[in-house]
Amino acid sequence: MPIFFKLSNKTILSLAGDTAIPFLQGLVSCDVTKIDKNPQFGALLSPQGKILYDFILFKSTEEDGLFYLVCAQDTAEEFLKKLKLYRLRQKITLAHLSEEQLYFYAGDTALPPTALAEVSSTYSLLGQDPRHPNFGFWYKTASTPEMNENTNIETGNPEQFHDYCLSFGIPEGPQDIIQNKTTLLEAGYDSLGAVSYKKGCYIGQEVTARMHYRGLLKRKLLGFSLTSGAVTFGERLFNEEGEDVGKVTSASQTHAMCHIKINFLSETLKTEAGAILTPLTPLTQNAF
Image (cartoon, rainbow, N blue to C red):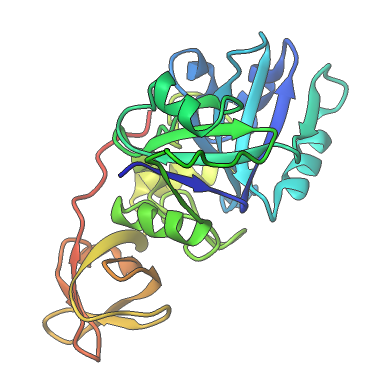
């Protein structure tokens, strides 16, 4: 059955102006000049290459020169303040659209208009999530719609959305990404299309490129399916020889995100309590 996740832990920043895209291009990790083709997933980094804020960039279908940044609610005001700091005298309008609510539809195709009308005519499609072709679609609405009695669409919450992300091996939120500590490559964001090695300079680019070209990455986040047992945050993980190779960062009943030494990403792992974890097929979308 289709599911709409109501995501109170997400919000929208708006970005408007003739130089909006060049402005972002010099700041963030992804190639935002490709926004005319597809939504873009990326991050604003510290000068040391650590993730400060990640986002999905959408181009408005309602107004030329208007763009939306879907980001975490908890750090949205910090993110907005940082963007305004870098704006300087450029004629760019930045705002937090706090009245807008975000929903995510889990599926490999968008809802047809007839199904959308069953829920609410106020929903507006932002676009497809670029992190995985079968992941889903983002919608926004300025009101709180009520489901019609005859609708066949279920709703989910942020916790269930995180579990859904885990099933795709996608790190999501502060459970997996530690602000100003986790790097792009450590998070596996290069496999999600969030890193461009061709676009030129951006904040944190030098550190990211050095890690990539010199092979300096030592640990990485990777999704696992639970073959048996259950795991919890912080549990240590061991290979067949009993070597401690990492830990669990978040988990659902069926999947887990784990922080693993780079040499053991393809191995089946276990916990002291006997739970068995099998690595998911690595995401194959390439950095550009």
